[in-house]
Image (cartoon, rainbow, N blue to C red):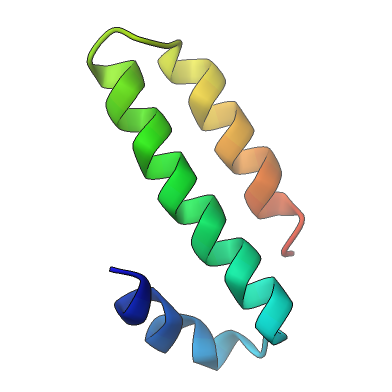
Length: 58
């Protein structure tokens, strides 16, 4: 998954550090969403956190 994401992010003009952080954000976000979906977390809170982290790349 990470390799596919990295290929997509090449066109965003991110630094290597930003790219790594974005990949980690996506990976962690997916993990958190899966946990929330299984009842182990607050789905809306997870989405809010993901949105906040993604906002730092704008």
